[in-house]
Image 1 (cartoon, rainbow, N blue to C red):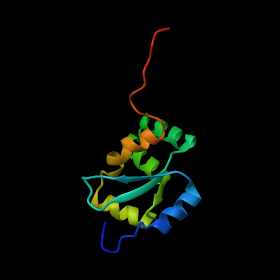
Image 2 (cartoon, rainbow, N blue to C red):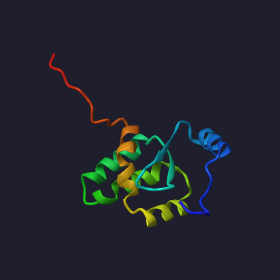
Image 3 (cartoon, helix red, strand yellow):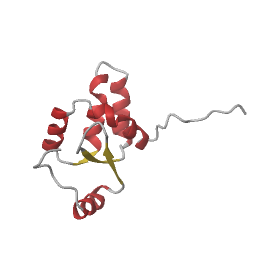
Length: 111
């Protein structure tokens, strides 16, 4: 992110896992040096996201969900990411949706 960006070392990862459980590291070739650690969305968070996607606030819905599940870096560092890469929420949206169980690969069969 920047030279003064927080460091994601093994002790930080261990502390985050102890507090939040299973975690996912998000990175993108489009955003050099950006690393975000997220937890799986809770049902209420995903429900709120889905409602916002169907309402007037659709553009901010993914950002709201990303902020809800983000466990690292802190809010100040994440704001710096957004200032540099305003499309970060959209870039990572598919992965966050996958963590909520949306793969786009569901199958239906006639019985």
